[in-house]
Amino acid sequence: MTGGPDVFAGEERNESRAAHTSRRDVFGIFSITLAILATAFAAAAFWVSSTAQDHAEHASQQADRVAEAATRNEAAHGAAGKPASPATSTAVAVGAITFDEQDFTITASSQTARAGDVAITIHNAGPSSHELLGFRTDLDDATLPLDAGRNVNEDSAMMTKVLDTGTDLAPGTQRTMHVNLGPGHYVFACNLPGHFRLGMHLSITVVS
Image (cartoon, rainbow, N blue to C red; front, side):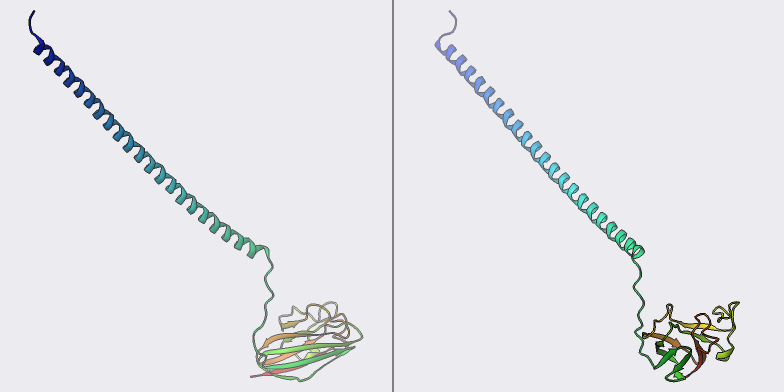
């Protein structure tokens, strides 16, 4: 026989060292694999978190843009769909005139006024309904141009309308309106059919 106990002992030691080395290599590979997997998982988690944050920020920006567009749209539609508020005068009247109308005369509390915002009150003593129109013109109040129906031609180029009650005043009612009058001669009249020719007109002078 060749060799002896020492030879076998050496071979066993070599085999043991080889096995130990093999286990150590496997453990090292396993450790490296775990490290790689951990790094991959961490990278994936970071990517998911970053992507989710980006999506959240994008969604928030989209929501802000939608809300802003809705606000603009509502404002535009609100402005277009709602009637404008009636204009209100904040001017302080420099004068006031009360016109009393009745069948078929007009009288005024004053036939002279200062230029500027004038508060005009129209009172209808009846018994018929009346209106009040005002014109700036150089014509005498009794000589205003007439239309084919022999009522005042409100569109005549010889005068400029400055006041119109718009609707008739029922007997026993009154209305106050503000009108800005410059210096000059004015004629006020009721232009319901036939009323002007029956004498419902008078002149007012506005001074500086």
